[in-house]
Amino acid sequence: MNKPNYQRPVFILGMHRSGTSMVARALNEAGVYMGAIRDHNAEALYAVDLNERLFSTSEASWWQPPTQEDLKGNMPLFEQDLSREDLFGAHLKHYSGRLATLKLSHSGEWGVKDPRLCYTLPWWLERFPEAKVIWVLRDEQEVVQSLMRRQFKKDEAQSSLTEASALALVRSYNEAAAVNIRNSGVDHKVLKYSDLVSEDEMLQRKTWFSLYQFIHIRPGQMTGFKRKSNRTIKAPAPIEKLDLPTEGPLVSVIVPNYNHAPFLPQRIESILKQSYRNIEVLLMDDKSPDNSCEIL
Image (cartoon, rainbow, N blue to C red; front, side, top):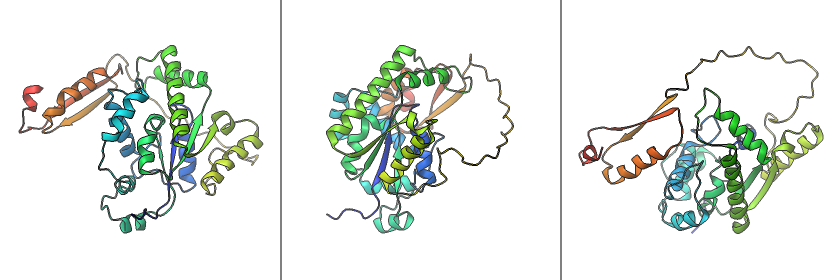
């Protein structure tokens, strides 16, 4: 069977708050297509959905990640029919499944960024064994403090993480990434967050250029580099923020249900297990012909 003749993907992984979004945005500026539909963290939503559902097979979440043993047992059965063409089509938001059409849509470099790849990397490499991997590493305590600061922002979702559980989480993600990269033998590059943002301009530039050389691309708008001009840049006026209350729900998440009675108990359990304190989740049924309403 001939392999598709489009560029191999770049997988960007690393613990949450480690600088993966910064790297993904820089690569996107340089021409690495990070997906048609992305969130504010430069994560392609179809990939996040796949990784979250793979986590859910082990009753896990990003803040309560699965064990390697659980995932290893569940991966072979997860979305077996999804081919590399299906995934590439989802990346382009193009579902024709015809390789020629996909190649006409995009023939350049493309990438997927999601911290959950630390755990789910084997599933993706089974479909894209030729991929390259970028692992962004940040000091453990810096990540913990970043997570804690986010915890107490009024306009951010709040979970039950503590400094101790956050540190354990960081180490779990890093261990999973190290094990999966080592076991797969995938072509990879490790980047230190401290080097990417270093005050030593030579070190910073060397680190960013090594990243671009690893993927064989040219820098785009030089994201991550210091300006060499002496001109002063006027700071934009601060955006007025709403003083949102934290005692009530900050966000209402509506989960639709239609004719999925066999999966309802699992979905309800997953909702009840979420640890965010200022988010409400509404499970709504749209007149399902099965017995969904009875279960609800």
